[in-house]
Length: 140
Image 1 (cartoon, rainbow, N blue to C red):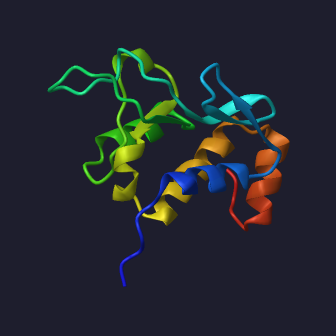
Image 2 (cartoon, rainbow, N blue to C red):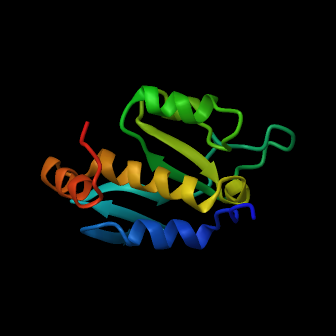
């Protein structure tokens, strides 16, 4: 049996399930998941840099995930098997974008890894070390 595709609800469940997470809300009510007051996943409002190439309409469903490094970012956006992308607005910024309408192209396990990596990229060294040890993962 093939793993089920990820869902938007999974983003909320996974992000909220990480340690020491708070949720703030943007001016339009969009959730922003934070660890130690640092955003690691947020639902972006439509912006002029992320548009449909055919219609020019702004994407209304962009989710932003932090990454640890430019190398990690490139691995996600250059992999033809992931729907992750970036825009010139995010050049030099350690994050990747994902349209909610394409989230099902990822398995829930793949999405969990992206959310966990986003949290790890923003968590303090102490929290990161504790989480990695708790999950039996050797640190960086």
